[in-house]
Image (cartoon, rainbow, N blue to C red; front, side, top):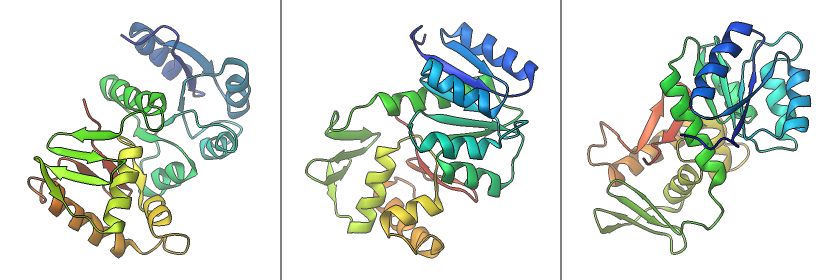
Length: 231
């Protein structure tokens, strides 16, 4: 059960969707705040300080992407987009604007709750709180920059380690090709997807038990990658 104090802002102009989410989230102990438009959402964030936002893109006044960009100017509240838009371009645009995750309608309540827990776990982790990250046979000592698989030390190139560190910092979150290229290689490399593909392939070869069937670094087709969340 979630703590009663966790507040979720649901932003959707469809009353039936808001009712469904209010019922589903309420049954798991979350406090639900509702907004039917982009302006209402921005006002609700200021008034209620939610812990997480579930955001539709097709709002009557502001596009959800614009709401995300405005929020990211001053807030790091996790944002999970829940939209009927299923094209890769829409997903990439929303994630690049600052959304933490993206689900398409119709959706499963179980999957939404799982994504919600991952997003909340990420925000509640304090910088430096865990010096060692562990996931299955993978162990990463972030303070010493030591990577081990099944107890054996693995040597990574600087770019491979930078990618892995970024995945760990955002465990469970979808990272787009543009985000990864910009953060690891720098501005101007956002379209050099071949660099990313080669480094991801090499990283999987060093970390995965079966690189052809990855269980650690997962592909989000056409969008990017995510590190499988622990637990």
